[in-house]
Amino acid sequence: MSDIALRPALRRSRWPLFLLVASLAVNAFFIGATATDFLRFRGGHAGEGPRALRFELRWLEGRLPREGLDHVAAAVGAVRPSAEAHIDKMKQLRAGLADLVAQPAPDRAAIDARLVEIRGELEAMQSEVQKTVVDALLTLSPQMRAELAEASGAAKH
Figure 1 (cartoon, helix red, strand yellow):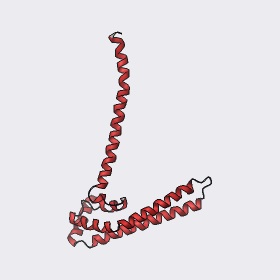
Figure 2: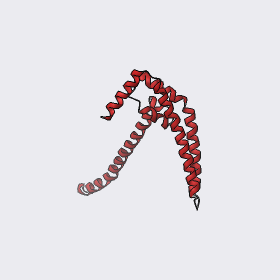
Figure 3: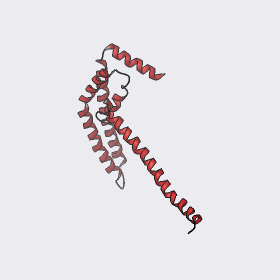
Figure 4: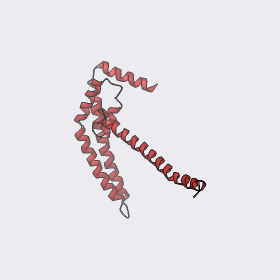
């Protein structure tokens, strides 16, 4: 075989290799993004407890000194078992919702009632966590609370 005949064959065989490398690069990007997100939620105070708890703490990061954030995180940690109980209840309700939706002739009234129950659990959990955060913030020194307001004001502009 001549050198000219081999060149097109080599070029064609490079496409699968190129596609494989491109696919690996895209997968690596998504794996890295997922790992970064996972580690961000798991690191520091933002990683403690369910997402609802992390969400309530994340908005305070960078706005409170470490000792203030530690104080609020400790208070939120105390309601973690209750939040997890709400989450478990919501999981049960959603499993039941899936059963209702999967019926050949779904009962819309039963589905709506289940959705009301799920929202009620979510609201109860959110109210408890938010009340705990605010109560903990109110026990901080006036100076620390002022710093929180200043940091929040700077974030608006």
